[in-house]
Each structure stands twice: as structure tokens, then as C-alpha cells.
Image (tube, rainbow, N blue to C red; front, side, top):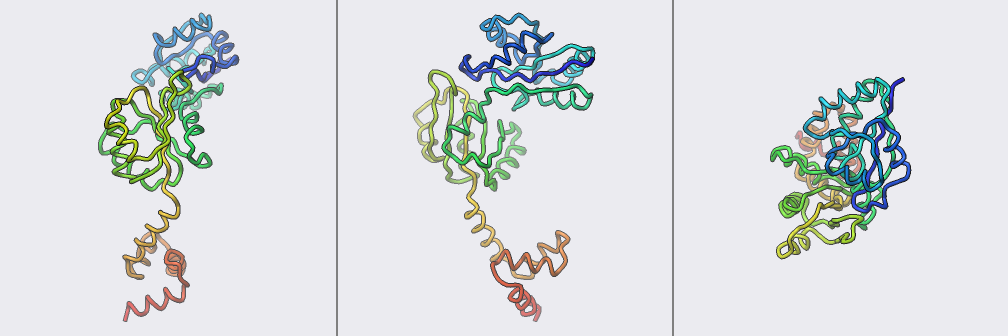
Length: 282
């Protein structure tokens, strides 16, 4: 019988956030796959757990996943833990989960701490719609593409950042998004937990004199729909009606449907668009 992969969320700071279900599972499984065994041994010792460990991290995630799946197919149960928080969130565990599904290996998740959700609930920003970006790419071209996409995002955005990159990231966010509300969270669930609701400019001003310390979660206000609508209207107004029509024709719309969309964009009736098109042709 095939074993099961258990995704076990571990504390992001406060050890009391470890759930009984996770401790029971870590004792029950045949092996624990840990991002950093040197770090995880402290957690296991604290809870008097003596299950054998093996390393599973960014640099062996594909090759080691094949090995772990082999063990699962042979009937072993395996728990996956990350250094802190929920496995597979900004974590190589997503590769192992994907490969398990492809091989028909059962996977279950044991809910628990996740820094992104903890920060979102503390942020004071909208929680109804949000997106998680994790760490921005290190490649400059890819990072530029991601930032450009985020500039049009209307949902609340959640990012992770290391202290030595924080100021640079804040500068890039401000340059791309403009002034936005932002909440900077650090040391979540720990003794010196810090939650700072502010704005982009005030955050940059603050870190002119303060040194960033600890791992950060940034929760950033999305672009308002009103602002997005104003920008769209300004863009349409810079076009002729015929150019606006061509914009939709290029997307495969027929003239009737394109005219309806142009009228909607410009906030006028279809008759007015029809009249403008005939005037422009003359």
C-alpha cells in the first residue's frame, strides 16, 4: 500500500503555535523531510520527537523528490516540514507535491502557521481579495516584468523580503506603484513582533535612519478600481475612435461587438461611436 505525504506546518516564531496534530504526525511517520535538518532538530528536540530526518531543500528538490516518492510508493509515510511555516509556500515542497500527484501518491496538509496570512490579517488592508508574490525574482528582467504586473494589481499584495534587500525593494515598489499604503511586518509571533502600517514614502523615510532587521512580510495596497478606470479613460481619449476600434478588431472582435466595447469604454452610446466613425472617414 502506498504511503502518504503529510505537509506539516511548523511555527514561524512562537513554539506554542505547533498543533497537537502535527506533533502526533511527526512521531507517527517513518521519516521527516526537512528543509534544514540542523534547524529542525531543535524543533524536534523541544517536542521530544525522535523520528529520523532527511534533507529536502532548494538544491536537491527534484532528485530527492524522486527518492522520497520511491519510499512513499513502498509504503512509507513521510512528513514534510520547512524551516518555518507551511511547506510548499515559497518553498521547494511545491515540487514534491506536484510529483506526488503525478505519481498517484496521496498528499494531505496539516494546517498551521503561514507568515503571509498572519501578516495579511494584521495589516489593516483589505483581506477580501489578495495575491501572494513571495520574494521578488533576483533576475533584473524578470523582476521588472513582475513589478509592472503588480502596478496594475487591484488586490492587496503580499511579498517577502530579507532585511538587506528591504530598502531597495521599497524603492522599486515606490518607483513602480507610486504612493500606496503598506504594512511592514517583522518578527511575527515572536517577542519583538513589529507591525507598521504606513505609506511608501514614510517607510522609505523611516529606513533612512533605522537599520532593517529580521525577515519582513510586506502587505501592499492594490490599485483602486477608480484610479484604474481613470487611467483607462485617459488612454482611450488619447486615441481616435477608429484607433480604438482597431484595438478590439486586433483581438478578433467583429465590428458590432467592438463598437459596443468602445462605447462602454468611453461612456457613450453606440450611436455616437457610429457617428464618429463616419465623420472620421469623411
